[in-house]
Image (cartoon, rainbow, N blue to C red):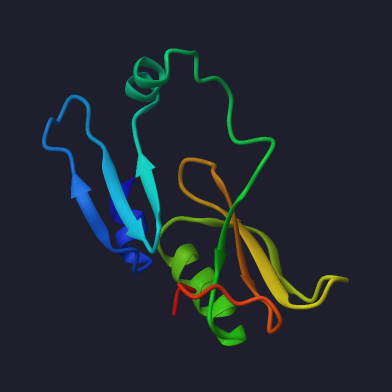
Length: 121
């Protein structure tokens, strides 16, 4: 799965070298995206990991409106499924949604009045 995120331009910080329990970490400003196999995550967290992402989405704030379309196209080219094409929500901005190859829901968003200092270019 880490290859999918590398293909989107996320900077790989660390890649586990145990083929039976691989993990990957991506540095994203002050946030780290850590990808673990479910069994390893369940062991680390001390709880069952069941179902798919149903109560939240990961959100990537991009620096330019055109990047919303570009990231969605890149994600699709690498196995993602678009769940909602880019649109202008009632709160302003511009966003679209996709599910990565494991079914995790992502929002790609640009908002001219809300830019993070570490927005993904």
